Structure formats: C-alpha cells, structure tokens
Image (cartoon, rainbow, N blue to C red; front, side):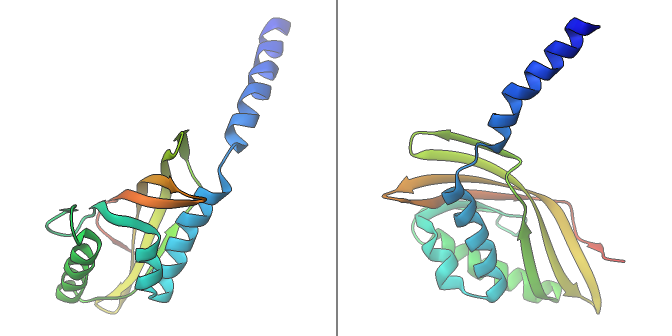
Length: 156
C-alpha cells in the first residue's frame, strides 16, 4: 500500500507540470477569435487565420478549403442561420482540453458552446472545437478548425 501511495504521488508530480504547460499565445489567439465573433468583428477574426484556412462546421456544405475559404464559410453560415431563424449568436471556447505543440505547429481541442435565439427560445449547442495553429513570426494563426456538437437544445 505504501508503495502504491508513493507511486501515485510521484505520478502526480510528473503530470502536474504537463497539465499546466500551455502556450499563452495559443490561448490568446483562440480567445481573441471568440471575442471577435461575439463582437461581430469579422475582420479581426479573419485576421487570426492563415490566408486560406480549412474549416469544418455543421453547416452545409460542411467543409471549406482553398482560396476564399473563410469568406465562403461565413456566407454559408449567414444563409444557414437566416434560413433557420437563428439570431444573437454567441460562442464560448473553454481552456484547452488538449494541446500538442511540435515546432511551429499546434493541435488544440477546447470545449465550446454556441448560444443563440431561435423561435423565441434560447438554444445552445455544446461540444468541442479542434484547432490546428501555425506560428508565423511571433503570432499563432489558425490554419484549421472543426466544430463538433449535437443540435441545439433549449436552455432552461
């Protein structure tokens, strides 16, 4: 039993530094993206991305890449939201649940939610975002993101 306790304590010492070893620049990029969406500052959000990001979202046609991918996604999102009667959308990205960095590239997953009005009700989709970021100079830019959540449920 004593050996087990020592093993658990030693493991905790090894895990603790890894759990807190997060890159502040990555978190800043992701949270600045969230703030930009919530303020309706599309130009600021777009500026956080590489020129032609890969985007996967639960809006048809579901995947965008290549020239103009951000603008095409934004247009398709606007059409989908209008057709579904959604308004007043706000996103939330939590702290990284997983963060892997290799040189100038990073893979990050975060819990997320999208809260909006639809049919006079407040609705929420909760799930995860997966980001791929690349370091360009001193800044981390979003190269790809993928939204994963079930359909919205009424907030009670």
